[in-house]
Image 1 (cartoon, rainbow, N blue to C red):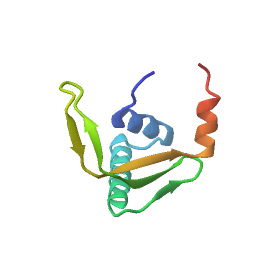
Image 2 (cartoon, rainbow, N blue to C red; image 1 turned 135 degrees about the horizontal axis):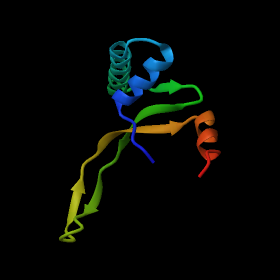
Image 3 (cartoon, rainbow, N blue to C red; image 1 turned 120 degrees about the horizontal axis):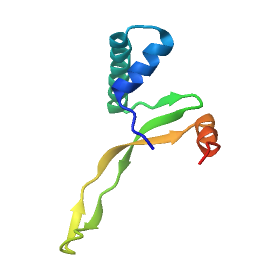
Length: 97
C-alpha cells in the first residue's frame, strides 16, 4: 500500500489534463481550503458516489491513562466523519487483493 501526497496527486491530474502542475496544485489547495471552511461552519459536503463529510459532536467521557491506569476526563469535541458513497464502496470491495 502506498501513500499519495498532494504533490503526486497534482502531478497525475496535470498530466491527464495536460495543464501546468502549479495550476493543478493551486486548484487542489483551494478545494481543500473550501472543504475545511465549510466543515468549520458545520455544513455537510456531499460528493455523489464518492462520500459525505460531516462534523459530529463526541460527548465527554472517562478515559484511562494506559501507563498509570489513572482515570482521565476526556472533554467533548467535534470530529469529522466520512461516510463512503456507493460507487466508492463497490470499487474498494471489488479491488484485487
